[in-house]
Length: 242
Length: 252
Image 1 (cartoon, chains in turn orange, purple):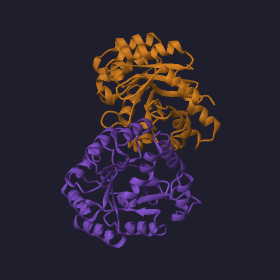
Image 2: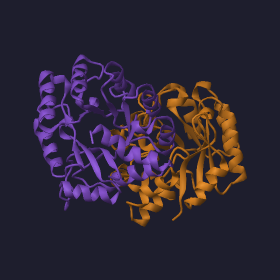
Image 3: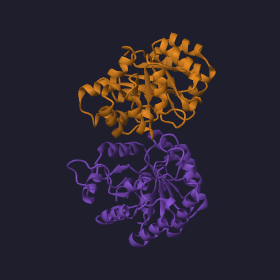
Image 4: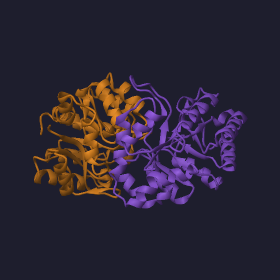
C-alpha cells in the first residue's frame, strides 16, 4: 500500500523540532513513500520566508520524498512571499489560525487564500482550537471559495468532533486530515463522510507516525478505502503530484 | 495489578453481541495489559440529570462484582445545591466513594462558582478526589480546575484529559504549581506526553482511555494505551504512572 503523509513538520522550532533526515528515517521505518512538509512553529508564526526556504530546500534535495507546503502569516499581508514560494515549487499553502493570530473567517486571510486558489494550490488549515479555527469557520471560507480545495487539519481535534461531519456534509471542497484524532473517530469519518474525503496525516514529530498509520490500518480492512485515505485523495488534491 | 485505566464510563451504546458485565470488561482490559479501572458515570453527566442516585448506585453495584479491580466514581451536579452534597455524603457512607466525576461543559456549570466551592469543601473534608473533564474552553481549562487545589489544599483534583490537544501545557504548569493536581494522560499525543513525563512527577500522573463499558470500542482502547506505551520512560516511572498513582487516589 502506498502511503503519502499529508502533514509533517521540519525545522528547529521553539516547541518541537525535526530535521529532514529524522523525518526521512521515520518515513522509511513506516514505509511512507512521501510526505507533505511544512515549517515548524516559529516559522509559521513569524519567520515565514526562512521556514519556506527550509522546506523548499529539503524538497529540492529529496524531490521524490517531500512535497513542500509554504506558509505565510496573513497579518504581514505578504502575498509576495507566497507567490515566491509557489514559484519555487511549493505545492500548497499551510495556515495556522491559532499561532498566526487570526480567525479563519477574518478578511485578512482572503488575499492569501485567493492567491492559492488562483494558482490551483490546496490550502491546509490547522483546525480544532477554539475561537480561531472551528469546523464551521472553515466551511464558511470554503463556501466563499467553492473552487478552492481545503484540508481540515487534525479533523478539528479535540472537542469539535461534534461539528466535523455536519459542517462538511454540504461542502464538498473540504477534505479531512486524520492526525491527532482518535482511531474511533477516523473510522466514523470514513463511514459517514466517505473515504474519498479523508486524508491520512501524522503531524510528525508531534505524534508517533507508526501509531498514526496503525490507528487506521488496524481497524479498516477495505483495500480501496485504504488506498484512497493513504494516497489517492491527497494525490488528487495535489493534481497528481506524487 | 499491572495497570489501572483511570478514565472509563459505564454504559454507552450497547455493542451487538457483547454483554456489558464486570467480568467481560476485565477480560477486555486484560487484552490491553490493564487489570483495573475507575468507572465514572455517563448518562448523569448530561445537564438534564438532577437525580444522580440511580446511576451512582448502578456504578457501585457493577464495581462490587469485581472488588479490588473495578472502582466506582460518583457524579452529582453542583448546581442542584444541598441535594448534591447529600448524595456525596450518601455515596461516601454507603460505598466509601473515593472519586467524584464532574463534567462542567456537559453539566453546564462553572468551576469558578460558589456551588462548586461547596462541593470541593465537602470532598476535601470526606477525602474524595474530584475528577474533571478538562481541556474544553471555556468551562474546563486546567487552570480553572487547578484553582481548587489552591483554595482547598488537601483536596486532590484530577484533570481527566490533561488539557487535551490545546491546553496540555497549561495542565503541565498547573501540575508543577500544585502537588495535589493530578494529570490523567488521555488526550495529549506522544511528544506532549514525553514532555509531561519529563516535567511532572510520576506520582502526579495516571493513564485513562475514555472507553464506554458497553461499547467494547477497540479503536479507543488500543489507541490510548498504544499511544501512552509508545512513550519511552524507565520502568519505575511507567509503573507509578500506570498503577500506583491511581491506586493511591483510590486508597489502595
